[in-house]
Image (cartoon, helix red, strand yellow):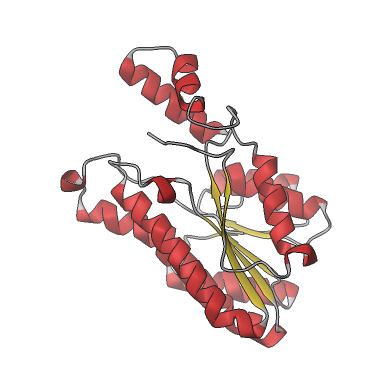
Length: 247
């Protein structure tokens, strides 16, 4: 599990651990990783930047040495990048977003590909966003990276399916977490209105009129990793209460 020490990643990792799985998480945030390790002493916690090939190779070595193999790979690491018109986006910003959001998953999948093939089984879950579907403006690097991630996942599914390896995408929407709270607060401050009104406006464009709980995302990941989902691959599964429009 990449970016597994906080937020959605920690919720997913915790759900798997509670179900009896042996869990390995990596994260670039040392504080979050230390907190996760303290509450999950049985987990393998690795500090790593998934956009760095040498660090990803080190993750593979540690995981295979500790567990002897890997059954489920979840690529959750991602950064938001700039909010700006495409003509204002710096190349450095573009490269940074793609390095984490797209190159990172490529590197982790590549790192464990041979292990999956040798096992004759494996489950890859890539975390995208409903932003890829709605192509929201002023978020070009982020949207492009998530569209690329979905293409990567589909290609890997076709290529590795004959080895018994499945690859799917989940696409969360408006999640009830600290990140969404910060975004709402920032938008409210910029517009000079209450955070509650900004949240209500956003929820008006969600069919179920509510935010997604992190445990719901974790539950979908558990299902995709289970035998019940043995025939599911090359799919993008929204976990978003049906986002009708996204600003």
